[in-house]
Image 1 (cartoon, rainbow, N blue to C red):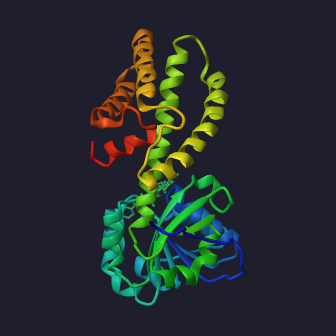
Image 2: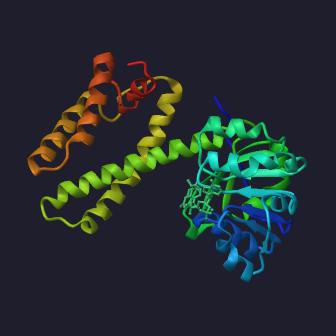
Length: 297
Ligand code: FVH
């Protein structure tokens, strides 16, 4: 059982110098938020022209990666992937000594753990937001890695959005990231499938959307209830049995086929339930599907 994470308050008036390396869509937003909060901000990007707008607003353009690293005690990097981080910063690893490197590049937990060997001040991060909302309370960011390094810069990092720290394992933020993205893709795929199904009956997606959103509010209640069952390791069917779910899943497959809508997604949903039932979970709750995902059914 893990303890609840610490959530960093978005308060404080520290204006420590910050370096942002990588000025793509997200890096631009990060640097803009630091500048707006009053941090002296140094920037570097492989394609230098992308720094022009930030420099016009007060950022300092570093002539090289080495200069960018030495300019600030807090270095934030946001590139396409871990390979780009290794290629860009790897040759200058020695410059990281005594600094905090916050890597907001998406990646896997193992990539984060590998990169954490570079410096004692490594913090990995995941941005659960789009560039437009960076610097607002709507943005939430997840961090894990060197606790002292995170603590030292938590106010500055809080400028980007609501920051949550998961502890010393540098891979944990990346793991939360992919798990949460999976929730997003699963939900969106279900919505898109439903929109295709209703679209075949000439119902616009914008007409369907409010009903989908209302239903999602109920689904969040199921998530909380099933999380407790998963942690208890007991799946009493307090609402409906998996067998009852399976019968309705078959309706979704049949309706899809009849409407000429792709049946791949609902057929996979049905197949997962059938595997759990074959493993003895016909009379338990939907949460018992966790045994399939754990590879036990
Ligand atoms: N944009 C978003 O909404 C999402 C939100 C969640 C988290 N992601 C992650 O953020 C990373 C960067 O995403 P991005 O949207 O800023 O991506 P781009 O606009 O494509 O910018 C990519 C930057 O990476 C630089 N870069 C790529 N390869 C290299 C390399 N080999 N060496 C040096 N720099 C490299 C690129 O430079 P340039 O092409 O401008 O010269 C951009 O600065 C990403 O992990 C998302 O998953 C964003």
